[in-house]
Length: 248
Image 1 (cartoon, one colour):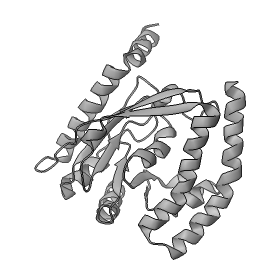
Image 2: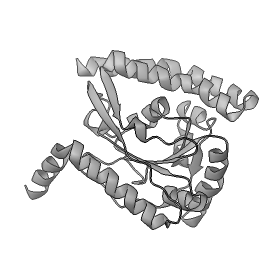
Image 3: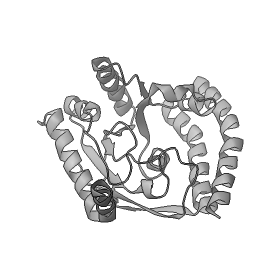
Protein backbone atom coordinates (compact mmCIF):
# COMPACT_ATOMS: atom_id res chain seq x y z
CA UNK A 1 0.00 0.00 0.00
CA UNK A 2 2.86 2.38 0.79
CA UNK A 3 4.32 1.72 -2.66
CA UNK A 4 1.02 2.41 -4.42
CA UNK A 5 0.46 5.62 -2.45
CA UNK A 6 4.00 6.78 -3.18
CA UNK A 7 3.55 5.99 -6.88
CA UNK A 8 0.31 7.97 -7.03
CA UNK A 9 2.00 10.88 -5.26
CA UNK A 10 4.84 10.77 -7.81
CA UNK A 11 2.30 10.83 -10.65
CA UNK A 12 0.62 13.90 -9.15
CA UNK A 13 4.01 15.65 -9.03
CA UNK A 14 4.71 14.60 -12.62
CA UNK A 15 1.41 16.09 -13.77
CA UNK A 16 1.34 19.40 -11.87
CA UNK A 17 5.01 20.44 -11.93
CA UNK A 18 5.51 21.26 -15.66
CA UNK A 19 2.51 23.63 -15.95
CA UNK A 20 3.39 25.31 -12.67
CA UNK A 21 6.94 25.91 -13.91
CA UNK A 22 5.44 27.85 -16.81
CA UNK A 23 3.19 29.77 -14.40
CA UNK A 24 6.31 30.59 -12.37
CA UNK A 25 8.17 31.94 -15.40
CA UNK A 26 5.25 34.22 -16.30
CA UNK A 27 4.81 35.30 -12.67
CA UNK A 28 8.47 36.29 -12.48
CA UNK A 29 8.01 38.62 -15.42
CA UNK A 30 4.86 40.39 -14.22
CA UNK A 31 4.49 40.09 -10.44
CA UNK A 32 6.36 41.61 -7.47
CA UNK A 33 8.17 39.14 -5.14
CA UNK A 34 5.51 38.72 -2.42
CA UNK A 35 2.66 38.18 -4.89
CA UNK A 36 4.84 35.91 -7.01
CA UNK A 37 5.59 33.85 -3.90
CA UNK A 38 1.88 33.38 -3.22
CA UNK A 39 1.04 32.38 -6.80
CA UNK A 40 3.91 29.90 -7.23
CA UNK A 41 3.28 28.67 -3.69
CA UNK A 42 -0.01 27.14 -4.81
CA UNK A 43 2.16 24.27 -6.11
CA UNK A 44 3.53 23.73 -2.60
CA UNK A 45 0.05 23.61 -1.08
CA UNK A 46 -1.06 21.08 -3.70
CA UNK A 47 1.93 18.89 -2.90
CA UNK A 48 1.27 19.12 0.84
CA UNK A 49 -2.39 18.26 0.22
CA UNK A 50 -1.28 15.23 -1.80
CA UNK A 51 1.05 14.10 0.97
CA UNK A 52 -1.79 14.31 3.48
CA UNK A 53 -4.60 12.70 1.49
CA UNK A 54 -2.70 10.34 -0.82
CA UNK A 55 0.31 9.29 1.25
CA UNK A 56 -1.30 9.81 4.66
CA UNK A 57 1.60 11.97 5.85
CA UNK A 58 0.50 14.70 8.26
CA UNK A 59 2.25 16.98 10.71
CA UNK A 60 1.78 18.75 14.01
CA UNK A 61 3.57 21.92 15.04
CA UNK A 62 4.44 22.82 18.62
CA UNK A 63 5.95 26.10 19.81
CA UNK A 64 4.15 28.47 17.43
CA UNK A 65 3.97 30.92 20.33
CA UNK A 66 7.73 31.34 19.91
CA UNK A 67 7.41 32.89 16.45
CA UNK A 68 8.51 36.54 16.64
CA UNK A 69 6.82 39.42 14.94
CA UNK A 70 8.71 41.14 12.17
CA UNK A 71 11.89 39.86 10.55
CA UNK A 72 13.47 36.52 11.42
CA UNK A 73 16.06 34.04 10.24
CA UNK A 74 15.22 30.33 10.52
CA UNK A 75 17.83 27.66 11.26
CA UNK A 76 16.18 24.29 10.69
CA UNK A 77 17.15 20.64 11.06
CA UNK A 78 17.55 19.01 7.63
CA UNK A 79 16.51 15.39 7.15
CA UNK A 80 14.22 15.36 4.14
CA UNK A 81 12.73 17.25 1.22
CA UNK A 82 9.56 17.55 3.31
CA UNK A 83 10.67 20.53 5.39
CA UNK A 84 11.44 22.57 2.26
CA UNK A 85 7.73 22.33 1.51
CA UNK A 86 6.17 22.41 4.96
CA UNK A 87 7.96 25.51 6.25
CA UNK A 88 6.21 27.46 3.51
CA UNK A 89 2.85 26.38 4.94
CA UNK A 90 3.13 27.29 8.62
CA UNK A 91 5.69 30.12 8.60
CA UNK A 92 5.48 33.65 7.17
CA UNK A 93 6.83 33.93 3.60
CA UNK A 94 10.21 32.21 3.58
CA UNK A 95 13.23 32.50 1.29
CA UNK A 96 15.48 29.45 1.33
CA UNK A 97 19.22 29.33 0.88
CA UNK A 98 19.85 26.39 -1.46
CA UNK A 99 22.57 24.93 -3.68
CA UNK A 100 22.61 26.34 -7.19
CA UNK A 101 22.69 22.86 -8.78
CA UNK A 102 18.97 22.48 -8.04
CA UNK A 103 18.23 25.07 -10.70
CA UNK A 104 19.32 22.54 -13.35
CA UNK A 105 16.45 20.16 -12.58
CA UNK A 106 13.94 20.40 -15.47
CA UNK A 107 10.68 22.15 -14.58
CA UNK A 108 11.19 22.01 -10.79
CA UNK A 109 14.46 23.93 -10.97
CA UNK A 110 13.03 26.41 -13.44
CA UNK A 111 10.14 27.16 -11.09
CA UNK A 112 12.45 27.33 -8.09
CA UNK A 113 14.58 29.92 -9.89
CA UNK A 114 11.53 32.16 -10.20
CA UNK A 115 10.93 32.24 -6.44
CA UNK A 116 12.51 34.87 -4.15
CA UNK A 117 15.31 32.60 -2.94
CA UNK A 118 19.10 32.58 -2.48
CA UNK A 119 20.96 30.20 -4.79
CA UNK A 120 24.61 29.76 -3.85
CA UNK A 121 27.64 27.91 -5.13
CA UNK A 122 28.59 25.79 -2.12
CA UNK A 123 32.18 25.61 -3.29
CA UNK A 124 32.59 29.39 -3.45
CA UNK A 125 33.63 29.78 0.22
CA UNK A 126 33.62 33.43 1.29
CA UNK A 127 31.85 34.44 -1.91
CA UNK A 128 28.93 32.21 -0.94
CA UNK A 129 28.76 33.86 2.50
CA UNK A 130 28.76 37.26 0.80
CA UNK A 131 25.87 36.14 -1.43
CA UNK A 132 23.85 35.04 1.60
CA UNK A 133 24.52 38.34 3.36
CA UNK A 134 23.78 40.59 0.38
CA UNK A 135 20.69 38.77 -0.89
CA UNK A 136 19.52 37.92 2.63
CA UNK A 137 19.43 41.58 3.64
CA UNK A 138 17.35 42.41 0.59
CA UNK A 139 14.87 39.59 1.17
CA UNK A 140 14.51 40.42 4.86
CA UNK A 141 13.68 44.00 3.87
CA UNK A 142 11.03 42.64 1.48
CA UNK A 143 9.36 40.79 4.36
CA UNK A 144 10.73 37.27 3.82
CA UNK A 145 12.11 35.07 6.57
CA UNK A 146 15.48 33.80 5.36
CA UNK A 147 15.64 30.05 6.02
CA UNK A 148 18.90 28.11 6.24
CA UNK A 149 19.65 24.43 6.81
CA UNK A 150 22.94 24.84 8.69
CA UNK A 151 23.95 21.19 8.33
CA UNK A 152 24.24 21.90 4.61
CA UNK A 153 22.77 18.58 3.51
CA UNK A 154 20.08 16.12 4.58
CA UNK A 155 21.20 13.95 7.48
CA UNK A 156 19.71 10.59 8.52
CA UNK A 157 17.75 10.51 11.79
CA UNK A 158 20.10 10.36 14.77
CA UNK A 159 23.01 11.95 12.92
CA UNK A 160 24.29 15.50 12.48
CA UNK A 161 27.35 17.38 11.32
CA UNK A 162 29.07 20.65 12.05
CA UNK A 163 26.66 23.55 11.55
CA UNK A 164 27.75 25.95 8.82
CA UNK A 165 27.88 29.59 9.74
CA UNK A 166 26.09 31.31 6.81
CA UNK A 167 22.70 31.86 8.45
CA UNK A 168 24.26 32.87 11.75
CA UNK A 169 26.54 35.35 9.96
CA UNK A 170 23.51 36.99 8.36
CA UNK A 171 21.91 37.23 11.81
CA UNK A 172 25.08 38.77 13.25
CA UNK A 173 25.27 41.56 10.67
CA UNK A 174 21.52 42.32 10.68
CA UNK A 175 20.67 41.78 14.37
CA UNK A 176 17.59 39.81 13.30
CA UNK A 177 16.39 37.08 15.72
CA UNK A 178 17.01 33.43 14.87
CA UNK A 179 14.24 30.83 15.12
CA UNK A 180 15.55 27.26 15.63
CA UNK A 181 13.40 24.37 14.38
CA UNK A 182 13.62 20.61 15.02
CA UNK A 183 11.54 17.84 13.39
CA UNK A 184 11.54 14.15 12.49
CA UNK A 185 10.57 14.21 8.80
CA UNK A 186 13.35 11.72 8.06
CA UNK A 187 11.34 9.01 9.80
CA UNK A 188 8.76 9.15 7.00
CA UNK A 189 10.52 10.62 3.94
CA UNK A 190 14.16 9.60 3.76
CA UNK A 191 16.80 11.24 1.62
CA UNK A 192 16.31 10.45 -2.09
CA UNK A 193 13.73 7.81 -1.20
CA UNK A 194 10.84 6.99 -3.51
CA UNK A 195 8.72 5.62 -0.66
CA UNK A 196 6.89 8.12 1.54
CA UNK A 197 5.43 6.56 4.67
CA UNK A 198 2.18 7.59 6.39
CA UNK A 199 2.31 9.04 9.87
CA UNK A 200 2.55 12.31 11.78
CA UNK A 201 5.69 14.44 11.63
CA UNK A 202 6.36 16.50 14.75
CA UNK A 203 7.81 19.97 14.26
CA UNK A 204 9.10 21.93 17.26
CA UNK A 205 9.76 25.67 17.05
CA UNK A 206 12.18 26.93 19.67
CA UNK A 207 12.38 30.27 21.48
CA UNK A 208 13.77 33.00 19.24
CA UNK A 209 17.45 33.77 19.85
CA UNK A 210 18.20 37.46 20.40
CA UNK A 211 21.27 37.87 18.19
CA UNK A 212 22.15 41.46 19.09
CA UNK A 213 25.70 41.66 20.40
CA UNK A 214 26.45 38.00 19.61
CA UNK A 215 29.02 36.67 17.17
CA UNK A 216 28.03 34.30 14.39
CA UNK A 217 29.75 31.46 16.25
CA UNK A 218 27.77 32.19 19.42
CA UNK A 219 24.50 32.36 17.49
CA UNK A 220 25.29 29.13 15.69
CA UNK A 221 26.25 27.46 18.95
CA UNK A 222 23.02 28.43 20.69
CA UNK A 223 20.92 27.26 17.74
CA UNK A 224 22.75 23.95 17.50
CA UNK A 225 22.48 23.26 21.23
CA UNK A 226 18.72 23.87 21.17
CA UNK A 227 18.00 21.95 17.94
CA UNK A 228 20.10 18.90 18.80
CA UNK A 229 18.84 18.92 22.40
CA UNK A 230 15.24 19.08 21.21
CA UNK A 231 15.87 16.26 18.77
CA UNK A 232 17.15 14.07 21.61
CA UNK A 233 14.23 15.08 23.85
CA UNK A 234 11.47 14.42 21.31
CA UNK A 235 13.01 11.56 19.33
CA UNK A 236 15.35 9.61 21.63
CA UNK A 237 14.83 6.47 19.54
CA UNK A 238 16.90 8.08 16.75
CA UNK A 239 19.96 8.17 18.95
CA UNK A 240 19.41 4.81 20.60
CA UNK A 241 19.21 3.13 17.19
CA UNK A 242 22.26 5.01 15.90
CA UNK A 243 24.23 4.09 19.02
CA UNK A 244 23.35 0.40 18.62
CA UNK A 245 24.35 0.38 14.94
CA UNK A 246 27.65 2.11 15.73
CA UNK A 247 28.59 -0.51 18.31
CA UNK A 248 27.42 -3.52 16.29
